[in-house]
Image 1 (cartoon, rainbow, N blue to C red):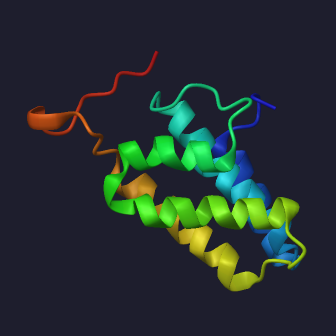
Image 2 (spheres, helix red, strand yellow; image 1 turned 60 degrees about the vertical axis):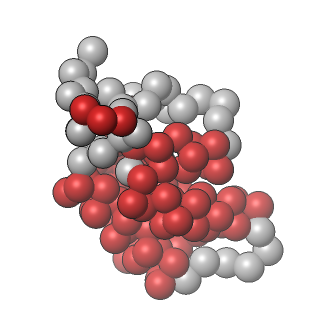
Length: 121
C-alpha cells in the first residue's frame, strides 16, 4: 500500500528480524529501500515492477551500488518465491545497503554535469 512510509517499512522489518522472521524482514527492507527512493522523488511509484526491474532503476541512480542492488533483488525474489528461507545475515545485507543508500544520496547517470538536483514534487 502506497500509504506506508519507508520509515514504517523499516520499523516493520526490524520487528520481523527481532522475531526471527527474516524473509518478512528482508521483503519489508527491500520495499523500504524502494519506497525511500519514491519519497525522495527519485523513482515513480513501483506498482507492477519486479524487484529486478527496480534494482535496475536504482542502479542507474546509485551506480556504485549496482551489484548490491541486484543481490538485494535476488534476496527479495528468493524470500518471496524460493524454497530456502533467508537468515539474519541476508537481512543484515539488505539493512546495510538501505543505510548506505540513505547516506550516499543518488549519483545518477546524468553525465558531465555532476550530481543532479532532484526536486520533490
